[in-house]
Image (tube, chains in turn orange, red):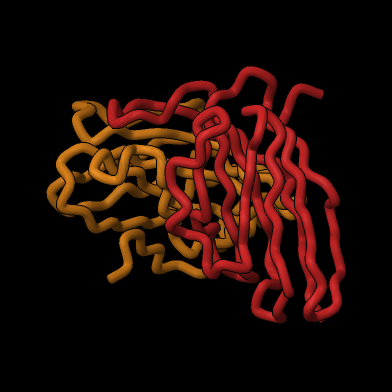
Length: 116
Length: 119
């Protein structure tokens, strides 16, 4: 079974608008962390935002926020005020305590296109 | 620069050839990870080092894959008798802390990857 599911292979957004990238996850471990990474065409994975399973509030980092709905096991990334430089692949990822907390499982990614 | 570096950036190998991929983590980082990223997919975990100890190698796809970090800094991923299905980008990442079961925010810093093409 897929541990991380990203159902949107590609997304388009107009510059300056907000966009939501979907992520659902599957785990029986009560302790886990959720991450979003950006991968531009250069190939380097860039950490964006983190949400812990016990965190009461949704994580925010500048223009990035994470819509964490624990009961639904979803962790959608919201990018506000999109910029042309946001065009990239975006990966949702998870680490579980039961696997030592270090093995990161990635989804298949969503390619975001920002239109001028 | 103080980031994670990998070399070579690109490698073309003939089927059956051995290759060695190098990762230089950020100085002082305890944890080092290798991932394999096939075209159009997310990275898949290969192996994890804490200092020089290889604590998890469950993601290595076959015994042709071997990784080492003998002095707890630079790491090498070696692939013997390469096959076409080994073609992928190999990403290395490091993190400052030990990646223990105390799950907490622990940023993994990724290198640019080595793109391996096996013909």
